[in-house]
Length: 358
Image (cartoon, rainbow, N blue to C red; front, side):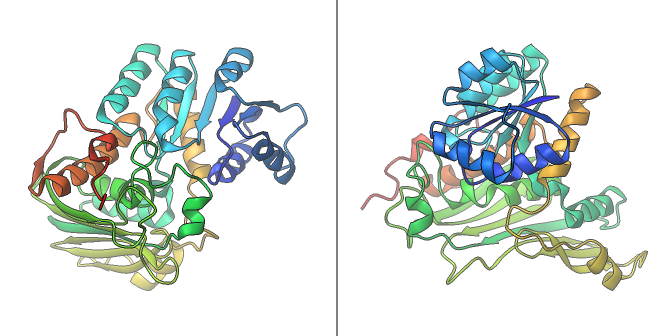
């Protein structure tokens, strides 16, 4: 399967490794900075036959890839995705799918019209820990679910933001909830039943006065099935990343996934006693070298199979829209100072420009 990578920045190595692990034919890479491309070619010993482009439209026209990964700044995801889809190319879009409801809807509509697969890169769904928790949910081991919590307690400093000027801007990124926390938000929505009906939230910029968006977000979510969710996200933790955790509480079970990126099962208690907690913690925990985890390779495998067998990938464009919608609803609730109901018909990060200006 002919594959192209669009965007050779911070997350691109995970995509290159996943493409190689799945034996994709990497025909081209693209970035506005030629040095970024050269660095990736050397670091990952890509074949000399791999073409390098600074214009992704030229890449699409000349190479006609079957699958492309979009790893640019978030504000460019939607337009690049639409151009790929309209060229008949299946896509993996790094989170978030877009920065507005309108753009997410346009991607979904274009994918259906052109009969191509769109996957949003929420790779933590493929963590061993999360797969085990999802299996327990599917088998109704929790009984009635009560509530779940998603905590993302990380650190980002001036050096991180200075390396890419788009980070922390409303036009190209958003704040900690949209960038760092959206993976765990996706998991919470997915595992709690998928249909939020209302959110009440606060956001603030408490430490990073050199960015436009929030570095702290706290929200309470009500789901259609009667369950509740709590979201806490921040990049203010001193002195380094602390944890990303996910809790689920039910009448017959309590689970905690933790570690750097919800990659470890730290609590496993069920009334049915079908398994031994200590064994589950050992068997379904991983220790990845970074917060990106090991999920890219199985996500790629799932997308390749979805294309080959004409089925939906595990993480669809609609799933990507749900995670985006949650973040935008949190932003709207915090800005308006009131609860916000779902679905959102219109909303964009640009609606909140100037929110924290002094």
